[in-house]
Image (tube, rainbow, N blue to C red; front, side, top):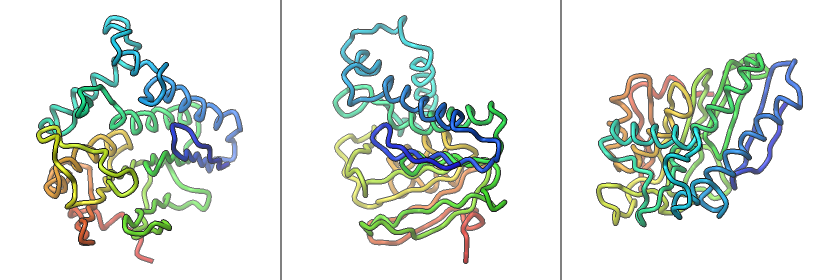
Length: 250
């Protein structure tokens, strides 16, 4: 079963290769993403994060999920030497850089808890893959060409039981910032893709690594179990030492 819906302002695709999958299984995942959007959206005035930013909810009254996100964000900030920070340039809390990967990972757990073993969850190009596809092969993930508006794919990855996330400026412009220099303009790199043990880990480190600029690839290289692929504004691409093993060559 494969379905696509638009939630959180992004295309959300759920593809389950197990024969026992039901419509209710997929609906549970889509409903979860709607819940996440209602709680963490920085575009909806009634969301919990917006109420927190307006001072309408005090820390003692934060929801369990909000407390978890703030804890994970603080942990990521420490692990990345401050290159990940959910407080944006205006001093407003915006956990978007960690919520998407976290939510995809949680959604995948919903399917696992239903006994499903082979599935693929894709939200705006960030992906959690479990098991194998309907053909009994590893799941395939395309890396978009940041210079082609069609869009087209420049690399195809083959993964299972892993996550893939991409950070970049080619779709949404300069929405990423360097917490150490909030006036910095990112004009040297346009895309950074990270493969990790799960999409939550890949997503948070992709965001931080992109903020580091070209040195972000060295940071990904230093993380056990992670691989990265960076595309510079001049079209040059560089990958970590183990990235090639995930690339489909035919």
